Image (tube, rainbow, N blue to C red; front, side):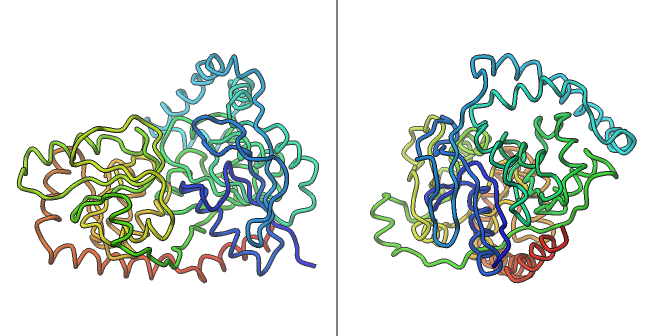
Length: 412
């Protein structure tokens, strides 16, 4: 009989678009030959609404058993109040980080309890808190060889890590943001069996926050799916897509888009002869911008997504908050010229390590200059594409990644 491994993630399913969701699905589906794999998740479909739209209970997604639990936050009426009160501790820790002191203080005092009670109230009043999921982990954790929570900022992931520490391989997908500095995160990062990072930039950030007494850790990461493209002409007609476009793929919200729409519009003013349109692919979580050169597709199938990627002239990731950026790696694997936000350490690392498969911009002026440079040179785009394919093949091979993960599972 195979040993059981459980992943914990907020949402799960073929039609769930998002980095953590895709990350979980790719790992889970590749572990089924060695373990009985389950996913513990919520009944939430739209993470912004945080409502139970999917049925509670068990469901098979291929060879993966999915257990869905309802969200039921405790005192949601007080959530905003708890959120304000919880900021005190994270601001203190963030200030110490900015002064360059947190790493050393954390190495002496690895677990912080300051304001922890309020932080727990905040987490348990969060729209995505699921007492039933947390209770299940507390009751049945002994049945699993390993429990693998993905994306630390969400309450079920945090509490799974807290209550099953000796069996947890935490994949935090962390980046520089306020929630990373909560006091209660120290209880997890110093006690779980293993912390698996996606990039060295993410790992360096964690070391500066949690110090030398952080749990055993290393790089696990994730690979890139082999894909089949939908017919381009059919896809182009279906979504009314232009011939030449700058492409964004992901959640359409302010956090992910940053200033990219305004930067693009200013680019078009500067280079009015440019034929480059802006295509935004993904679920819409913020108000769309009405402009004749901006195209929204909404959610598309995986095959359609890859077809749209393949025909993009330039691919952009404007997010400041990434722990890996699967979509960037997918673009690189397709030989696309990439332009990314230089304020994100992880994206900047990809640019440097790949030897220029992607360019990073530091602001609007830099964005406009580099986008024009890329758009204007077929030779440059070809060279960037070649470097991207080589970078992904060398660093994100599935056999290498799964061997890392299985080795960690067997070690705990």
